[in-house]
Image 1 (spheres, rainbow over the protein chains, first blue to last red):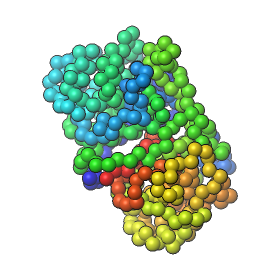
Image 2: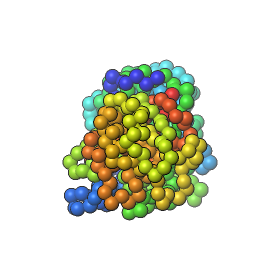
Image 3: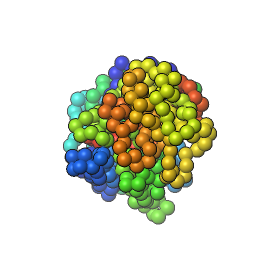
Image 4: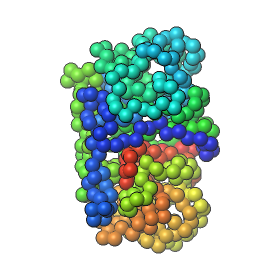
Length: 212
Length: 212
């Protein structure tokens, strides 16, 4: 069932002190609690972060009360075949592009918006390509179960009406945001995307891998 | 490479506010930052925890400076075949027991110390069965790459000399501690154990699954 994969790509941004964060979200603070270099018996760090820090998963609960929380996302969304696709350049990712992908029910789609090999920006970006509402509806209509992006959000920065989240999370999809998709080539993989099991959480930092 | 597994068990304790923690470690605090129930546009939580909160991975860096940190643990330790075994009842797990398992090089061993079906205790336990130093040496001699336990530590509570950690981490093993091993029956599985990618971290909260 699990032959050792030939290749593994880590899609997770390293979590570190002062990692750029979405304005309004908690800062990421990582500090030393015990250090062998300072004479302690062991090394331990203290972590402060938010449910959407770094590479993370959004559950439907992020925008709606009483719906699926991150600890109840189904394995059928988080584990399985996934397709990594280069998004067209431009400010938005539209329905025509999504339609051209011929997604099938149960798909996991990973959209790379930066050119291959371009690393994640060191600072929080001022803008990024976002999906249109119609593109989100197209993803839902195809029956996809997970959408991953290499941007901080599937919506535009501080979108007054975060309609892409509303459409996708409203349909029960899981979102993987702020993933590092720079290294793997376009193609078909197995995704393993495991968010922390935060009880009743709206989302969670995760570790996400592509394998083939 | 990744046929959908027939069965999946989540070995991860749900992370929640006031989760019991090893005395001296940071408290786990999970608080609401934004809530749709309180009129916010979305739900976001703020998390405070430590590298050894809840179900977590210890990297060699936990006890030694300058060695493998949690973000550099090899996939060959974290992913692959694993064996779940019931530990003998009693205060310690000794070398004879480990020898009886006939571990092979590259093994991942999960030791259940509570009886099958007994859930993790709701409070931080006052004591638990720990490995002896000789048992740890036996695991190292067999060439195992990961040891998982359902107790807060592979050493006894506040062991003055945490020799089990020193032996196992000194040999480069990864440790999975505080795992919930109550549900899956003894036997052979695939382990997927993904700690958060904390840069240079000594350990990290993780999500860990058994599949078959």
